[in-house]
Image (cartoon, rainbow, N blue to C red; front, side, top):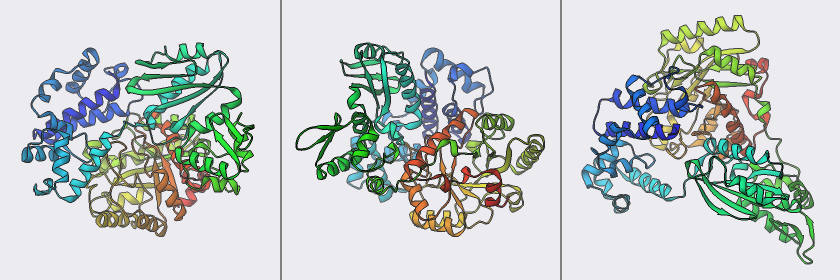
Length: 567
């Protein structure tokens, strides 16, 4: 079994135990273990028992071994029968926790999700004490999301796509190859993988493609197009096109639909016709471009548009007026200011994080372990944080190659106050504030809570500002314009959290924040050295948000950064 499958089962065990009213520490133990496994970059089967994994004790370790060995877990199968299946199914709905699911079942005896939808539409849920119109609305929205074709996190699907890309690129029969579709645009969630190649021997390419190790099912095998289903039931489409049409096909299959429609409309107005085979004169059908994307855009009198911007958000007009931004690149990043060590729920020591940062060519990092009342993340207490500060100071004396900033990810309480003493806040170089609880406060209260946190003189960065978890939890209801205004007023920095299931702020929101004059930072929120690679996902969000190097705090050189933060 793969990591995510095992983590899903552990989370479901936690849900069942919570539904059954078990004491908190027991179900939280399973959630911690699931989180650890989700954070692993290695296969759990390769490391279990060989190294200490945070949050995985002996009892849970034995259960994981049983899953790995047999593909089943007797304990899970037994307790699953003790709870009505519909209660567990309801927990799949974003924003519906185990207790709410059980409350709905106990009161209305819901048997199916259709029954639940009918109860919500007929406002029967409002009759349950503790529920109201907001819950009904969230349930209807969640049910609608469940019915949509499954979309996969960019961080899950991109490594799979890159593996297939690498295998095909190594073939001597492949002349040109590119990922296409929304994955080339680095969209936060992806439905399937599109790959485009040119080849004089497409039959050989298709044979290799449909025989890849990852293949679970061959849906279609043809001379110019084949479709396979790979691990995690992801669909992969491979198309072989002519060299003379490669640019046109790449432009067409990269999308987005909105960008393509706008571009084709412009072409028609200019007397052209654009499709996946090339750019043609409308009257004579004479082909005038198509071998490269650059050739097409140049013929239309505009600069080549980076794929991340092709969403019909003003990029065509900007390209016509030579006003496209010079987008930030991964090589521009000089450090990571959101890292977790094994002082809390991270896997690696500070020394190991430093070594990994040096390999990446960074000038600085910040160690920002959890503090406050976040029990699931094994939040650090104040004496331990003082110990960590001393530890970092000694490391800085020993290592002149990279600067390690003292920091903490401090819980923001319900009132917007930081859950750390003023004395300790003053000793830290960087204070990241983050909300982890009471995420469903109403719009006014949540906005006031965040604005109050931003007004704190010790706060440096607001982490994952909307609290969303992609495919799992909707963003909190926040007046972001008011938050952006407060960030600008108090000279605070907002984070683009690069962790694949967050990517928060989103591309649209970080663009708006930038337009409001707010400085942003990209942080990986890494809990292991291998997760430091998540920086590329944060950079992708920034690029989709039209951000340049100057808009991102951690593109600054060390001296400039320290001046900016007054360290």
